[in-house]
Image (cartoon, rainbow, N blue to C red; front, side, top):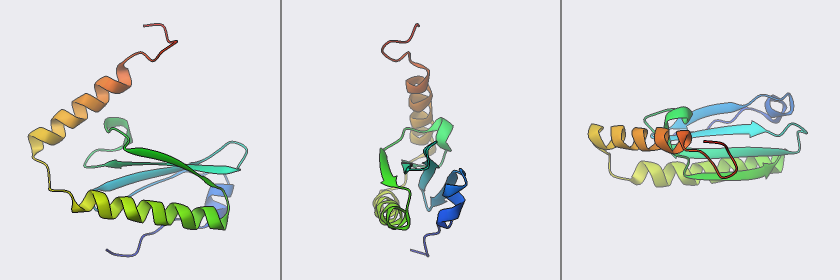
Length: 112
């Protein structure tokens, strides 16, 4: 696998998020408002965040050590997702529809 790129620590300390991909693996990292943690989410493409089901979410300290741990976590996910057999277009479209339906469904405590 080619080198896995993440921005430098100051990118996140300045309140910026990051979204990228590594093969079919997509990921997003968002700093907390108080700049103490970095929350990352991972999913399988080909679609972006709004049209996909998140496979895992993890939180890391917003520090160089946390950024290194995030990198290792994301590289592991990239290896896992990219080792899967490729899906057909019909399967990808069905996954997209399922993700949209899940996001549109009312959550407990929400008014329908």
